[in-house]
Length: 433
Image 1 (cartoon, rainbow, N blue to C red):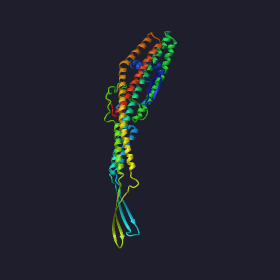
Image 2: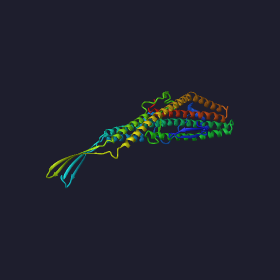
Image 3: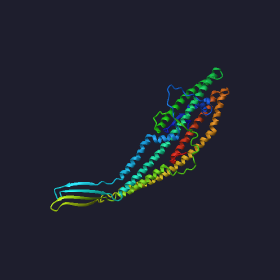
Image 4: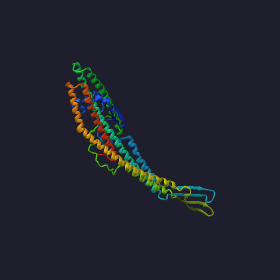
């Protein structure tokens, strides 16, 4: 419940859908039927056209589908193939050159073969940088996979919470209809004023509007989960799980950073790549040598066939590549500091996520154990008192409004716990049980 009496219903895009408190005041008077009696179940609306059966998914199923079918994730995975190709390029050696010369001076013909030689271990250093870069790509893919898993968990439990809200509004429609009929009968018999009937009609109209909104929001969340797991929008889904129970016992008090944290691994890989780049920059300061061997022909009267040998060396007079070494060293310092910052960031996020998930888990337990049963009792007593003529419509609406808001708050608390658990999983960089 936000400040000013407004309820916040979160969506897949993590932007709160603000619903005025008054929207739930009358129509949600009967929401406790969601947990109490089968008589509050609203029959599904008749459909003239058959629709495909919804795909039943557990969280594990949805995550597996996302990892293997999410288009963005699949496209990003090609970065590993590119990094592997770059490594193969780094392994290449310089090609030899072959030249033919023909002049009027003796010797008139020459066949020259030249071979550049890389000194200073340039090829080995290039290969080391290529391997380190490939490791960075692997670590980044692992981080993005963890992000995708977290997004799927968020979407999955938002859809489960939406199912709960839809069930609440369906029950509201049934009970609002019953309350309207009861108010109409009491007014017609002279046992209640016309105001009771008008209030009941208003409650019925508003709950019908609320039910349509909840169903539309549920459809939107379903489309978002479809996109995450690589299915066409509009594919019907039936998430299998319980937003009040799943993962409730998986929050451990230990807030130590997991050794396999994908965030820390990625930071360490970047540091290693930066250090390898220093060695490559230093090797560039060693000049390369080009060896030359040739066959000469037609130099009368001295000789018919001859030979020549040569070598050339680049003199590092103007370009010494010292600036490249300095830059690589600064990049390594930056990578080391980023690794330290990543360690602090992961520790902070993990501690905060653990505390938040533990607190919300306790709130969910108290809600299920104490609050919801009490709300069910208040609901039954309020309806029975009104039907017996002991209380009026206004008193009934006030009692059941509180019950309805309690039920919705319970759903929001359970959803907040599931989202906190997703954040905890992401902070760990590994899966929770």
